[in-house]
Length: 87
Image (cartoon, rainbow, N blue to C red; front, side, top):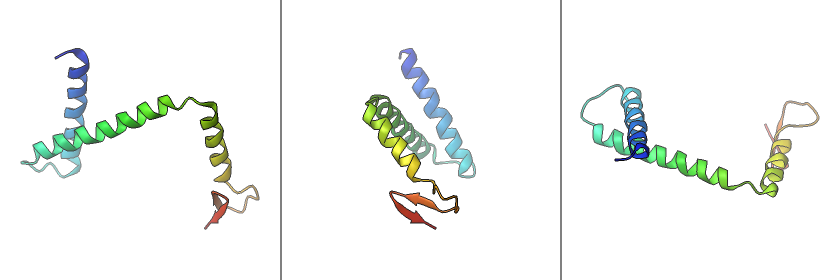
């Protein structure tokens, strides 16, 4: 096992422990906790990878446009989402 595999296994172990604690420290579900931890980390890692790949300037522009749409310029406290007011 190389360093990356050890590091990944450590992260899975820590996440499985967090899941175990979150679920009230019940014994007997360690395999499910491990599998859930693996799935959560895999999902997080795939999100990180896709965000790293999106260095296209148009992606940044789209994000800026979305951010500007979420706040009402009138200051009425209502948020806007994709051009529609949200109460």
